[in-house]
Image (cartoon, rainbow, N blue to C red; front, side):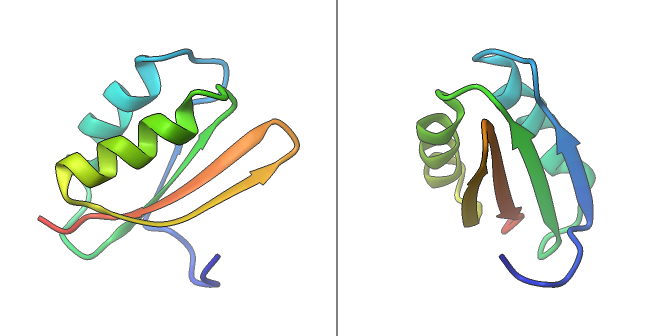
Length: 79
């Protein structure tokens, strides 16, 4: 994961599909194009959901890491 701090952190732990995606869809609009957002989730379904969402919406999924049960998704807003 890049060393710079994300511009926004969104904690979606303890939420099940589709809530993390709905929260990300709203939160991505709160940052500027080129800025990054870190989303935390512990729903195992969040990994394929985020991969699909970022591809369909055209935002960059810069990294996906798992620490224990927590997934860390780093996104960059592209439009």
